[in-house]
Length: 160
Image 1 (cartoon, rainbow, N blue to C red):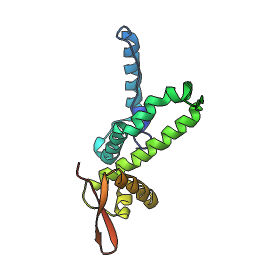
Image 2: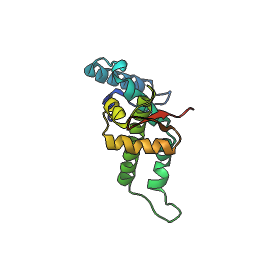
Image 3: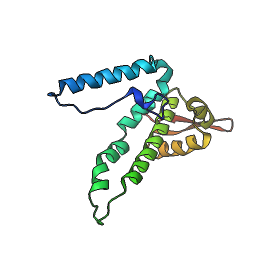
Image 4: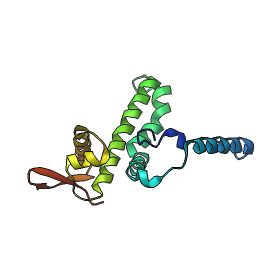
């Protein structure tokens, strides 16, 4: 949520038992106060960003990394090694950033054929970053070269 500019304060995940009614009420009150301080949220102003966040949440890569956290940091692997939790979180943060960037690009491509510079302009990503993530998306079969417009390459979404 921080990558998107929406901010992590607008979203909270809490585990509460059905027997903990007061705790649930306290959490709702706390979140309501935070949201009240942040002010109204205009989803139309964050259409591109919200679509990219959704892409991250659906990402097999991120879901796998999140599911393996305890296995990798608390239990030994086949080589009798544990990974430092901070190092693992750095890997997760990098993966989330990359998946978010790919999500932005996919959403930009939903508008039709785009050049790397056009995608960069729509997403706010650097041209080099767009080029890297576009390569990832091409290898994954999610985007492809479409045509040249003059000397400028245009890319499109792959049909699902």
